[in-house]
Length: 294
Picture 1 (cartoon, helix red, strand yellow):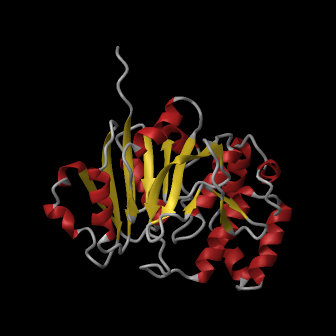
Picture 2 (tube, rainbow, N blue to C red):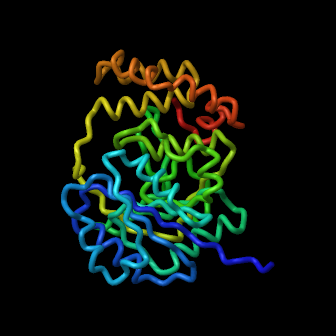
């Protein structure tokens, strides 16, 4: 039986994106690729009619619109993966601009066995010369951008704004964290989980997409929700000492006991035990590998 060419499912979580969704779709369908793909838009309870253009869009037959009811960006992405028909998943923000053959060149590294997850370089739509190359974490667990390197290289954190992953890998790690109902830390959590489960995350610096970096979100983001997500991530993947360190950090800005009670009440310890039984790399090894002093 002849091998069939690999196909990709491109998943866009959307919430109150305005004209950005159309602009992103326009770019997607106007660049060149030799890869067959489907497009899945998860409209997560948008209130600005940002997906209404699809009813008359020239490429509407190539787009599946799925409406969700405020499930959050992690679960919106998971829903897109669940609905995907193809073996490779490309997660993208709905405010991007693409270049020719970007899909082909990212997919190449998965097919060649060079990596398990690949992100492109990400430039600013407003200032394209400002470019980040995958991400890492500071000693306070703040996201930092890597500097450019000449060729494919390992990156601690895969930016959630654009990356490609085999569906079987995504399924094996349980996808994005289902306990995150709001924005924040979802790309950090899945990146750490991938490394701990023995998968490799890379940046391809010679493929660049442009991203609209916004000064505010088009939806409400609550500080306690951010702290909840970060502390939940720690309970799922970190040593007791690192959990205690993060608890102390959060206590300066939030009612940490209330946040922690919610994390524990939502079953974080049960999920932690499941993850500890499956992972092949310790969090000590992860932090040491990428020289993250936390």
